[in-house]
Image (cartoon, rainbow, N blue to C red; front, side, top):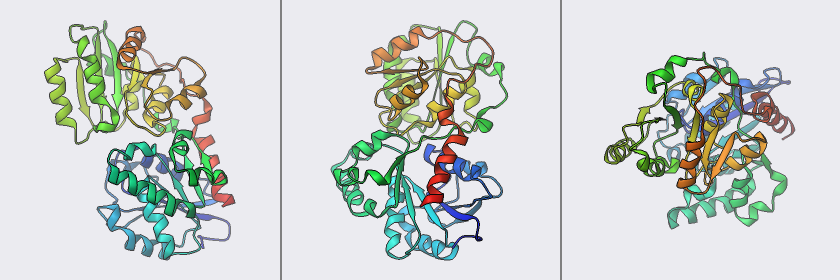
Length: 365
């Protein structure tokens, strides 16, 4: 297997190149693998999506042409047989199930699965919860390693898996500072906020998981004030519903900006980044905001945010238990000077540290 006697071929399995945190993490790791030791390859069930442009030119992409993961098992098996990678790593639970199921037909290829979000995110309906638990218990024991960016994911897994501590590894999400260190643009702030206003930024797919509806509800009591602005970056199926909620609340201070290719430019000029999520894994948006010098105000439900706060070791992250506490924190935020601020993120989350951790797994497995 592999490309030659010295390099391991590592296949990163993605559902598509949509603007998600899990996809971005895998692309970052693939881009930064040491080419003297590893030959990265991305196998995408569907190769469409805005993140495709982030893939380095020397990372080959194999597209399976499957618009849905559930329809991609057969082409995936064919791709693995043709490419013969030395190790496979997939991310997100529905994709992990397919990759592990494929082991029945393709032997000899070690499989690493990565859990990007807490299992409770999928357990709203009883049917989904039962399928999820059955998949974890029937398939995950066949993974060679189970990786997650936060301990919370492991804590929510069935007890059968929690007993397999030797297979479980926490590896934080990396922040590619070379990508996010865009030129500082103070004019971006003045475009959206007047000199006397605080500027808050939030970002993510416009879906129920991200809790933007909760944030808008919490801000409705602020509608009489004009000393703040909130920009929500991202696109998704709830766009119109959230816009209607904003209009009904009279919140002219809140703007939905849609998909932004370089959201960190907004983080750099924000007074704080807001994270009201109902569920998360380890939120990349919070890491990138901290790297841009923006403190984070987060709901306690936002996945591994407490682990980020612990690593930061300062007041860079404020975790709240209720929306009233959330808005109180916003009240206490001071306006930024119109200049770039130093990163609030420790080296623990650097690309160098995180990629090294993945390389150790790929070498040892």
